[in-house]
Length: 107
Image 1 (cartoon, rainbow, N blue to C red):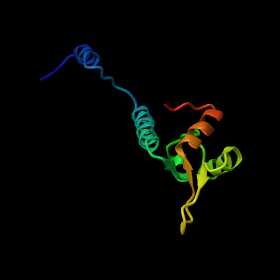
Image 2: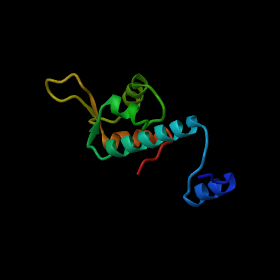
Image 3: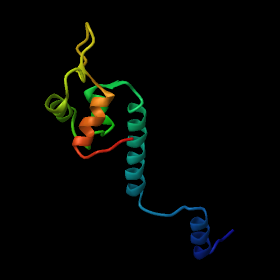
Image 4: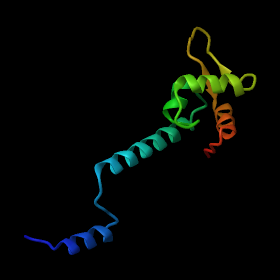
């Protein structure tokens, strides 16, 4: 079976599909996965520096940069480490407040 190119393109358009370079698909998939991770993280009560960095809540910054932002901008009791733990957490209200200061609004 042979299909005309124009018919094929029209069928793709009708289905909301398109043909393009794979790099566009990969970039879009990365954005989608980051959005999904961010949505899951924002449902938690507190986040680690790594979770904040991986979800790009303060933008595309490293875990070290997240730690510096939190140390600089967090209010008392927004950052804590549970007893017998080396892992630090930031309350979600603190995360959202600092993100807003950095120019990011996640609702």
